Structures are given as C-alpha cells and as structure tokens.
Amino acid sequence: MDCFIDREKVVKTPQELAEHLQSVFGDDLSYVDLRGFSEGSSGEVTSHHLWMTIGKSRLLDFVDELGKFDFPNFHVVSGDDEGDHISLYYHFDLYRAVERGVSLHVTVCVHVPKDDLTVDSLFSRIPGVEYSEREIQEMFGVDHIGLPNKALVFLPDDWNREVFPWRRDETAPGEDLVEDLS
Image (cartoon, rainbow, N blue to C red; front, side, top):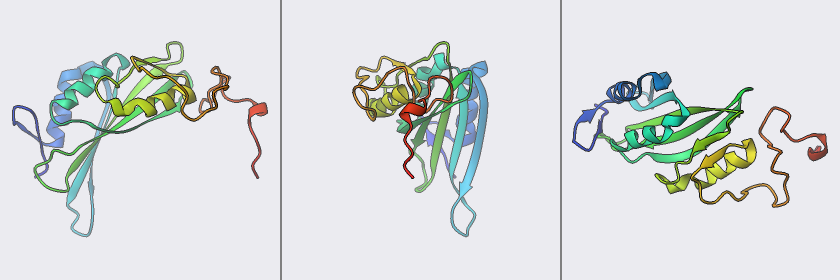
C-alpha cells in the first residue's frame, strides 16, 4: 500500500492527502487532480501525481501544510504567460513512503495577475528555490517578495529589465532583440 506519514504518524494515502489539503484550503483550491502511474509489466501503481491550483496568497501556507507530511523536495518553478496572468507551477516530490519505489509528485499552480506581478517567495522555507524564482523574475517579470537576491541569472547585466523573454505580450523582446540563428 502506498502511503505517507504525517508528524503524528498518521498514515495517509495519496487520496487521503489530497482530501486533507482540500479540507484545509477549501475554496482557495480551484483545481485538484490526482493520477496514478505504473511501471513495468505488473501494472502496479508506483507513483502518483497531484495537481492543484491555489490562490497566490495561500502559497506559503500550502507548502507549510505539505511539510507536515514530509519535507517537500523542490524541483523547479515553471511558468506560462496566459494573457491576463502568469501561471507559475511549483514542482515537488514527497518521498516518505512506507513502500520503496512509491512517491508522490505534487505540482501546485498559482495564477499571478499581470496587474500585480508579485508572489511570496518560498526562499524562507526552501532556500533551493532561489535560482528558479530568479529565472521566473527575469523571464516573466514576477517579483518574489522575500527573495534576498534578485540579480539576473541568464540575461546580461545590461539587459533592459522591462523586457521579458518568455512573455507573449508587449513586454516580450522585439524584432531588434531576436537573432536568426539558421
């Protein structure tokens, strides 16, 4: 049986964990999807992926709640310009499973409106987010409140900080900044 243990040693299956998060965050969660994945010919489910969308004001609370069950192993923040907002996807794994080879992948999405491009940084909880958050800042223009180092990671120091390479709007690079490499 694949399950996770919280600090009180209460066993939680991925479904129970998803239900717990829904009960804690209620209407602040606008999307929840749990999927099982199998490997090999046995067809046995060896991992689960939980997708959730939460209001940006609850992101730190969400990570804190995950931390009650296991330290959320952070992978990366990815993003997408979706017109009136930037969607940020925070990717984690929880490994504290009873059975070897069973894991729970958690992706939490936060919509950041373009008229308020700020979100709390996870740096105070997980310092390893620094480079991902800095990348999102320089490529999309999202300011991570509480991130101590906001220096550019990939773009040159003299880059115009009003141009965001991964945006699809008027702040995207113009033709003058695009080179044909063919």
